[in-house]
Length: 99
Image (cartoon, rainbow, N blue to C red; front, side, top):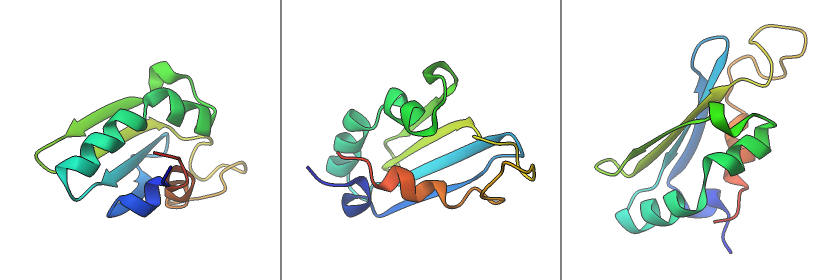
């Protein structure tokens, strides 16, 4: 098995407001996009972030070879519990998922 970060062109995460986080997976080719979409499920991402799978929004964009996932931030931006003000480090967690 490969790690997502090894086969994707880029895995990026960022804030989508103070309450939401967005993860973008840029796949590069249709073959990699198909592999990633088949392997990276909303349930797997929910487990990774300790979230309810029902609140993970998934957007597949085959014309761009991009998979986008949006979910509530583990902690509201700027609160004492927030460990990443910009939401950028969450990409490293997703990039370690097996595909």
